Image 1 (cartoon, rainbow, N blue to C red):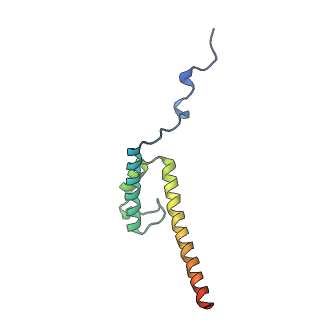
Image 2 (cartoon, rainbow, N blue to C red):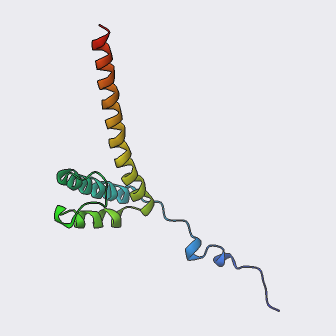
Image 3 (cartoon, rainbow, N blue to C red):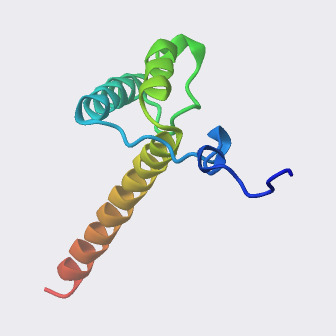
Length: 106
């Protein structure tokens, strides 16, 4: 008689397994790769990761960053980089408006 119940080892097939949580040294390697790549982008005057040209010299650093960090982390860090800059610009604009208002009303 053939058993239709799944075997315990079949419960989590490779496609369904949870990704391994990075260890401290893996996280540190990821952060170092991210910081080096972002420093290269800053030197090249590029804000949005992935939009740099081949001339920027950041291709190898990008490859290491994407290799050493989980895909979800890369997406998060890249989005956060752009949002942080937008927030700085908004804050600077608000401060300028406040200063102009204070000048007019003093």
